[in-house]
Amino acid sequence: MKRFYKVVTVEAAEGGFGVRLDGRAIKTVGGKPQTVPTRALAQAMAEEWAAQPEEIDPARFVLRDMADYALDVVAPAPDAVAGEILPYAETDTLCYRAEPDEAFAARQRLMWDPLLADAENRLGVRFVRVAGIIHKPQPAETLARLRAELESLDAFSLAALRNTSSLAASLIIGLAALRPDADLDALWDAANLEEDWQAELWGKDAEAMDRREKRAAAFAAAARFAGLAKDGGKRGSAC
Image (cartoon, rainbow, N blue to C red; front, side):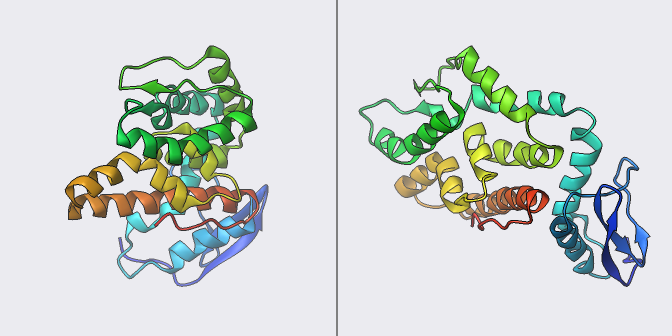
């Protein structure tokens, strides 16, 4: 599609702020007014439109697509989306460990135990650590508390969390990435610990590193989206 607009602006709208293209409001894919809660997020979305070349590249609409998902999918059924995210806690990467006497287990304890302890203290839950790959259920009370945490989030935070949790294969890391003080690089390293360990042992693969960088960018974008939607805050790079 050819670029069909010249001027991109941000204006206040009912319930928040929206991008205007040559003065015209934008709608979501589902046909709803594309109104977001903060001017900072609307401005960042406007920058995506302004940066488009003469031939529009849909892949560059990272924030716009998350906003559409929040408005079209999450807002009408937040409990259902929370239910889709919760399973990342049931099989959380941070809870599945190598055998205790293996060298990799020591690296896991070093990088993962502080994240688990922080989540347990902050949320008042207990996570079961598993040696090996055989699934072991998390306590019912832990899952109930986590569901309550997810259900307390607004639509934009849930939209971001869906991405951070799926990319990290960890609800613990996904939630940590939404915090204003999140160290996204450290969190992404924790999410990719096994892959990085294998690279140390056998060498780096160019294609795998390229995939890692692209996923890191998506992880950071989701965290940034949550911050902009909440208070206009900025997050780290995760690169």
